[in-house]
Amino acid sequence: MQKPPIHKSFLNAFRGVFMMIKTERNFQIEVLAFFVNLFLIFYFKLSSIDAALVLIASFAVLSAEIFNTAIEKICDIIQPDFDKRIGFIKDIAAGAVVLTAIASVIVGILVYGKYILRLIRTIKHLFL
Image (cartoon, rainbow, N blue to C red):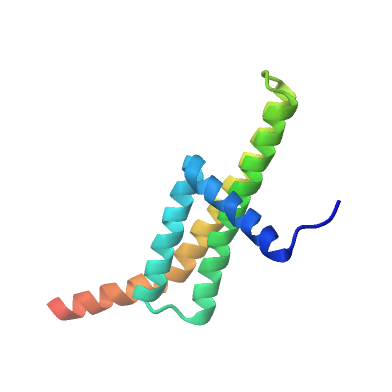
């Protein structure tokens, strides 16, 4: 089997991302969170390192969700009926997403904390 041209491979990959956006509620929420982070990066004028940390954390959550969905879809094809073993596999995949999301929240607190404190100090200074 011949590999498709590189541009076709990229088109297929982006089609997969758009299918996730179109069909997966959790992914839609995570994409919304990604755009909120993009806004905050520019609003707070994050340093390059802070912006990179936030973007890495955001893309990690999105990637984990894609892997989780792929695992769930494969499991549903292999065993359409309820099976405890399949349920265990799906729970493990979902656990990876939860851990990645927790890590991204921690990154967000560590990164945005100092910017939010600076904003609070500025607002406090204006009113005192």
